[in-house]
Amino acid sequence: MFRFEHDPPAVYLFDAPVVLHDHTHDVEYPLQLLGRMRSDHYPEYLHSNVIIPDSLRLNGAINYSLFRGDSKNLLFSASFGSADGLWQSEIAIGAFYQALVDSQSINPPNNSTSIEFDNYFVDMSIDLEADHAQEIVPAVIATLQLWRRAVEQAACSLRRFQWKSEYETNEQLFTKNVVIPLLQKAGYDHVRYNHGISERGKDVLFSEIDKFGRIRHCAAQVKAGDLSQSNATLLNALLNQIDDAFSLPVRGPGQNEQYYIADLYIVVSGKITSEAIERLNGKLDRRLIGSVHFFDRSHIESLAGSLWQRR
Image (cartoon, rainbow, N blue to C red; front, side):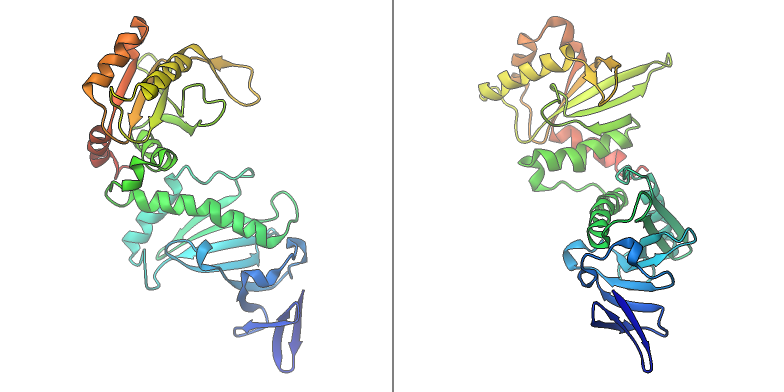
């Protein structure tokens, strides 16, 4: 644990000396030095500047801290601001703050992440004891992994859209980095990743309120690469997924209610040939043809160019 000595002033953590700044309540040490310390064993008045491993650092963050807040619970925070690097000016840090607030990536089970903006700095903090005392190191690592998605999404929303070659082969990356943000920026509600054993032909679910005030449920089936008439295996699999998407209802976990989708979007990171669309439409239930829509890379890049900087 922590041990404080006063003559001369020094602080030790599990008998290892740590850097002492100004007074005995402001110290600095690597995250790993905390070992398996629990949050309820952290001293009440100690403020720690924590050195985070490079693999866990957040892009643009200038400081990481552990301290007890007004509630006396242990808080972990990351600060972004005017030090050399990203988000230096007041305008830049203000835009970054708004993009973080708009991000839908921060949603821990206890919803305890807070984001504050003060002139040239943005602080993200989380209550590590919102539910109960826990080991500090794994809690901090889980928090940084959660925040990284939010920071990357915020930074991406402030840049022009750029296509990555990985999108042509990595379906999950294409879905999470392109398809989902694009649907959110287009104004759809309740956009969520649904890929897995229970997807039933629907990789992404989303909805909107139509002009009559009713909820219109939609879904996207996402594929990496090209969709052509020569790939009979893929076309047949896609036909089965389209049938499942419309015929099998969506059920939320723990919910009794269910619903069916009204429209399905086939989103491909490569090129869709007109012959492939004709072949699919030729085998679809005729009642579904007007409810199945096709988007390939050219459509995605065109939409992203106009929507990507929306918040």
